[in-house]
Image (cartoon, rainbow, N blue to C red):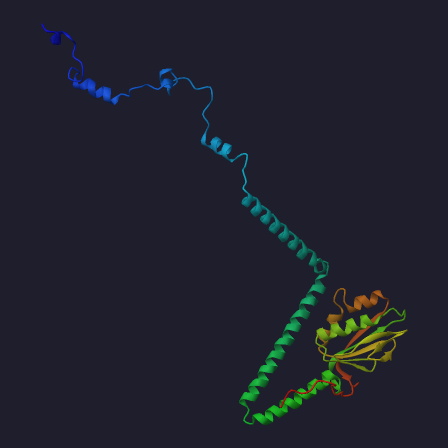
Length: 289
């Protein structure tokens, strides 16, 4: 027998095909951990495995902020603080109305509705005038008629024409001498805001440039001294004029705090016949050609 026959065969030629396939499929090395008995089927390791939620928490804490994130956070804080201050300011502004009685609130709402209605009536009147001018067969005559009517209205406002109509009479008794000119001026302003069309105080016509000053124990109205009792004759809608003076904290309450007595009487006919002289303007001229 030759040496070739006695030596065991080496290489893949002497290995059965089944063993060669198994060797190719098995890994060449067994991991050290598996060999040491630390595989999936062995005892747990000294450090327990963390869940996904725990790993997420470790990644989020402690938080790490960038400079841009800090700037955005500060801006949001400032915006929130400003909104809070604005809400607080608006809430404090409503305290005056919150303390008013229900009757006073209803009176204030009625006064606002009446002012809105007056503006709407004025708008409709102007539209009617425009339509009359457009539809009139003799537009020149219609324009002259409207001009004359407008002149009367402006004369009433300027105090150069006497006026009569419904309104109220206000009498202010000042026995203590505590009524100041600014209080009477507040009364005039409230009456104008409520729709007064003509006002007369102790025989002096009140116009757009009327001023009131102190005059010892009395008051000067456009340089004319008047004394108590102060009597206002006002033409306008009585249902608007009287509530305007009686609002909470208004003219009547202010005068009564100064121990003055205020009396208001409604009438269907008030005559305002104190007149102002027509004064030509010093500088203004008509721009019409």
